[in-house]
Image 1 (tube, rainbow, N blue to C red):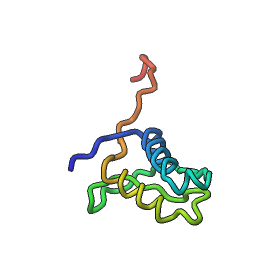
Image 2 (image 1 turned 120 degrees about the horizontal axis):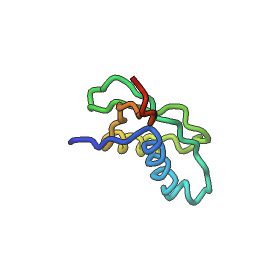
Image 3 (image 1 turned 45 degrees about the horizontal axis):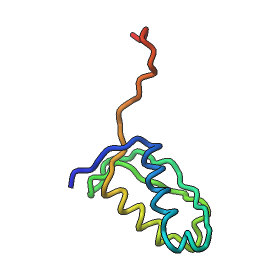
Amino acid sequence: MIRKTLNASQLQQEVSRRIHRLQEIVEDGVKIRVPRPQLQEVDKTGCNWNMTHFGNVVGFERDVEAVLKAVRAEYNLSTEAKSSGNPFED
């Protein structure tokens, strides 16, 4: 499967959105802190990023891991550097 590419902020938002719509998390009113994705060497699945150190995740580790696995299967982290917008760069 070809992965779509998102930047770090977009990946962080997508993982957060999926986690915070899970029934168990909604019912418990838990707010889980989602870290920024970290670029890594492409793994055996073809994914080039991972996330570690979620906050307030105790009791929801399995749910978060399932979301992370699904998002990693769909998306890769963009490796393109953003232009600063400075027209005078050499």
